[in-house]
Image (cartoon, rainbow, N blue to C red; front, side):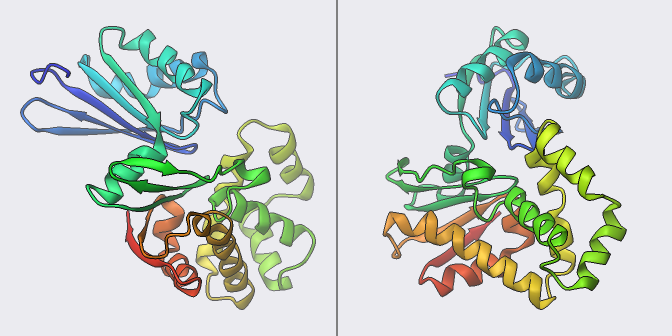
Length: 270
């Protein structure tokens, strides 16, 4: 166990944003926000650069006794990438790197059983029983999977705009708001780094137009796809389904409605 007389650093990392909490021995909490950290997208050197420029200045010289990092992409080789970056800055600290899904499951389910879901830039889910993840349908990323995520919602939105599958008024509103040509979008998606962040940054447009029938249909279909292709595979309709992530927060009504339509029990959303 870490020295309780020294601070502890906890991270909740997604592909777009990372929230850090410095827990002081007296119970005080300091919060710091940096850009997203995903070892599938970033090298150890790139992660180290983010930590040095965005995290360390906010820590004011504090040396944590332990670092608990829960992050997207933190599985298999991804864990070693994050550990390398953290070790370079906090060499004396105990390091604990695990998936953001485990962090979400512990926070959402507490000491109970349930299904924990993340709907943010990416998406993920798991069956959480007796304090451990017992089953996980691989999210597969925003090209092959990540149903219901910000990146996939953004991908579907720009595809429908460019192919004129949405009402012309919505297409014009999108073009006026973002000032993006088809060439700009193709460049950002196919030739620039972190296309998932770019696509997810377009999801707020859907929120602002959520009462348009065409947008409602898109949201209903995509959230239903998330549940059918992921959550339903656990075959536990008796368990509550909990949610974390920005998309789950901003589209809670639509997410809960899609869950209920498939006979699932929405639980908490944070």
